[in-house]
Each structure stands twice: as C-alpha cells, then as structure tokens.
Image (cartoon, rainbow, N blue to C red; front, side, top):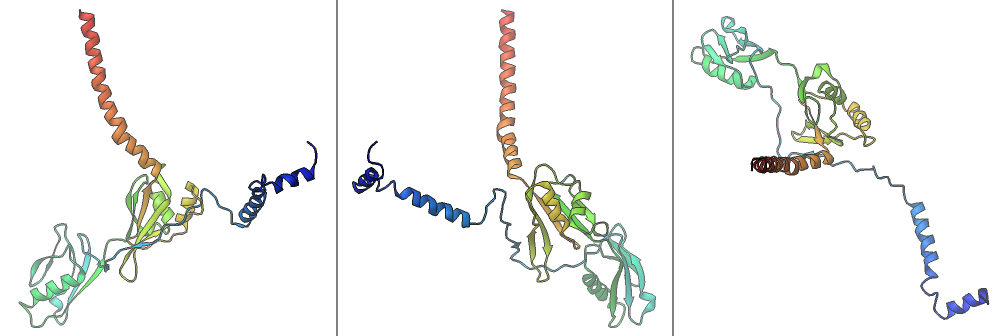
Length: 261
C-alpha cells in the first residue's frame, strides 16, 4: 500500500475512520475506569438486614412441674411453705389445700394465692419466690444434624450450640444463618451471623464470634441448591417413578401375554 501516514490521513479526512478512531479512546477510558474501580469478587454477598417484629413482647418465667417455690405469708408462718410443683401441676399449702401452679407466672400464682388466703385470713400478704427452676436453654433449628434445645450452661457461643446439635448439614446455606433474640425494647430480632467467607469454615468462624443468651434461637436456612434438588425430587422424580412403575407393570403384562399366545 502506498502513501503511509499520508494515506491514512486522507482516509480520515474522507470520513472512513470517523467511527473507528473513537474506539481506542473509548477503550482507554474504560480501562482507566476499571482500574480505578474497587475489585469485585463473585463470592461477595451483602449481609441481609436485621428483621424485627412489629409487636413487642415481655419475657416472663412460666412455672412448670419440678420447680420449687417458697411461699411466704406475712405474719402467718404456719401458712408459709417451701413446696415443689407436682407432676400434675399442683402445689399443696395449709388452709387452701391444692392449687394449680404449672403454666402460671410467679406473679399470677401470687395473685391466685392471695385471693384464696383472703377467704381464711384478713388482708393476707403473699410472696412467691422460685428457688429451683429449669435451666436456661438455647434452641438450634433448621439444617443441622439434630435440631435440639441445648442448655446454656453447656455452651457459651453459637458454634458450640451448633456443634452439640450435630453440626451444619450439606444442605445448609452457610451465609443465611441468623439468631433470633428478644431485645431490650421488647422486639424480637433476627440478627444475621456474618461469615467472613461463603464456605463452611466461614460459617463456623461467624458462629464462633456470636455469644449466646438465654432463649436464643439459632436458625440455619436451607441453601437454594438444596431447595432446587428437593423441588425436583418432590415434583419430578417421585411422579415419574410412579409412572415408571405403572408402565413397567403394563409392559410386563403385555410381555407375559405375548408369551402365552
């Protein structure tokens, strides 16, 4: 080709490079922008927001069979007793005999006992003090080996509670583990447990950094892959297996019929 740079200049003047000569500039601008932008990784996932209940709640202890109570009646020591709630949910006290206690809060039982003692005493003042109660628990549910209630005195962090419950299953969503807890304002909150990486070890690292409180609930969600596999099994594999059994029976019957002819 003759002309060298002069030839290219003539082509550009003729408008033949009017579009093409912009691409190198655009490519440079694009590369500069990409180099200035922060690096993105495919495994980077934003943590879900904290979900809280619209209603407010108050934590109260509910008496149950096996709890031990100290019932004090002021100025009437002969009516005061230390009693245990029997398996039938009742307690027995002087002057009022058997009283249902299981299923009530200590305050509710105090009100009930005051009403009953008022039939025999003048302005009784009753105090109910739980002295031996059930130990506090935490609860692990979802995609773990054995969902269960775990005594809080046996574990101090979420990873210990999950380990006691059989560990994370293969179907667990390692970045969709949350802890439900009652806040000081009376609202239940689902707190996402941050995992430093999307793999199983990242989930355990996040669980290790989460201290526990009484009545905490650890929820391990099911992964989307496991949900998809379960969908195929429920709506594809099982229906087809039923059809296959019917077809197989029909084929065997036809085959036997042909042999008999």
